[in-house]
Length: 153
Image (cartoon, rainbow, N blue to C red; front, side):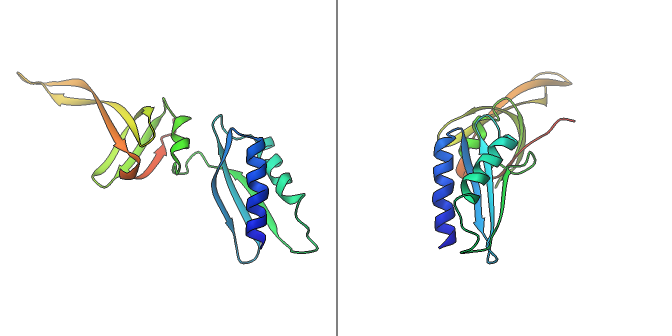
């Protein structure tokens, strides 16, 4: 089956390039193959070309006609895997959980959670006015519905 064959070729290619990892992989009914990669140090055009060649050069177009697209996870794509959070430490994330949205700087990741920090304005404990306080919250991966990197322009 085409999907199994492509998956094996993909796994072999990713073994050779250990800083890369698979985010998404689909084979459509019309044999359109789509591979979405990410990497601990990002994904270069050359990385996409290497993986594309590793798949394409080992499939026979005489046997099955197919189209192949190998891309990197987009800057605005939601983070899908715990491994994607590591490379975004120090960046601002917008995280949606069942209890609402949080926005803060990703300061830490663990095997089952992330930690965000942000500054908030709160009323002074005594007297009038507000003070800026540093907030910090740990969020379990299981509680995250969607997380995106907030880009600065």
